Image (cartoon, rainbow, N blue to C red):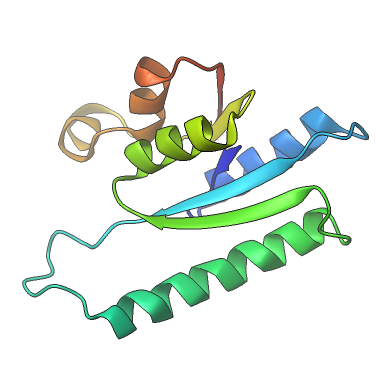
Length: 133
């Protein structure tokens, strides 16, 4: 299972996961957690959430299709919530053998303020986690 947020680091994580499974019969799940920005004063409407989810799903589907043209081994999941919580919950649900996440390399104050999804997943997951720089 790969955490995907559209960043270059998550793209590298997808490529790593696909190279890791190679020609085996393993499946790869691309998972995106949609979390409302903290600067939004008003809750998002259902329509706004749907539009965002559809756009993200389309990007994930395109990534999946590029990775596996038959779409037999690559699956897509978009869920709303905190990225680390979503990744851990989906990993439990699909009984993932491995969680792959990218890292943006945040350091210092940025890491303290923003937190680190990869660090949270590593510290809370009972499953092996690969962090791709």
